[in-house]
Every structure is written in structure tokens, then in C-alpha cells.
Image 1 (cartoon, rainbow, N blue to C red):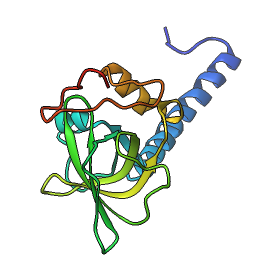
Image 2 (cartoon, rainbow, N blue to C red):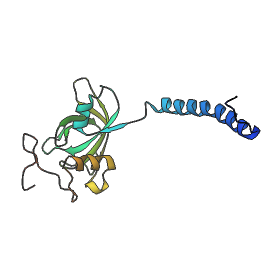
Image 3 (cartoon, one colour):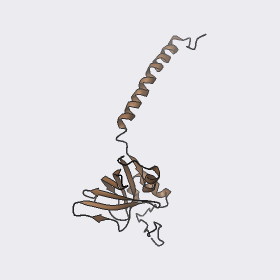
Length: 166
């Protein structure tokens, strides 16, 4: 008794499938291998802290620009803090900020953490309210109770808790 089908057509299909499957698996593996350096994961500051993101690994960091933290230097460098309800990340960016960049608003920064834990941004995207925010940022803010449909960000006290009346 044999495990091959009796029908000649069925055997031919089985052989074609047997030859095509490894080729497709190899092609998928090569595509994933080629894209490994260009895949950029999205994290909020709390998620990045929990994931222990490796220094130098390119990611997207999203959250709200904390009020009172934007510091522009004369050499074109800008320091600010991106925060969510549970954590904060210091960000350094050299370049021209988008016109919509403001304290208390949503931001997505592309870059990597350095060994000191400071996020070095190569690109900063700012939105004027959450309805234009990337889906991942909006979902993360909703999950943490930070979602403000009218674009108003909560005011934080020194401990990171939202103040009432904001």
C-alpha cells in the first residue's frame, strides 16, 4: 500500500505542491530577512520601558509632549519629554520641528534610544488633535485613559497624575 493517490492528476498536483511549498517558504523567509532593518515598531514610553528596547534599535515613540519641557537650543537642537500616563522619555531632536508641534499635543518620533536612555529622534511628526493621530497612538492613549477626543491633553502634576479640571 502506498501513501500516494491512485489518480495520476492527484499525484501530479501533490508533486507540484511539494515542490512549490519550500520555494514559497524560502521566498517568505528572504522577504522577512530583507525587511528586518526597516521594520519600525511603535511604542509608548511605558511600553518601551517594559520592553527594554535595545540602544540603537530603530523604533517609533509616541505620546504627548509634556507641558513645560520643550527647550530649544541655539544649535538647532530641541529637547522635550514624551509622556504617557505611566512613563516619560527624554527626546533630543536636531532639525526643524513641524508647524503643529506643541506642548500637550500628540507626537510620534522616529529614532532610537542611546545608552543613557535618551531617545535620539531623526524625525518628529506632530498632530493637532487625536482624530488625525496614527491608529496605534490613539489606541495606546485610549487604553491608558489619556484619550481626549477634542484634542485637549491632560495637565500633569509632578507625579505624572492628571489634574482635575483639565
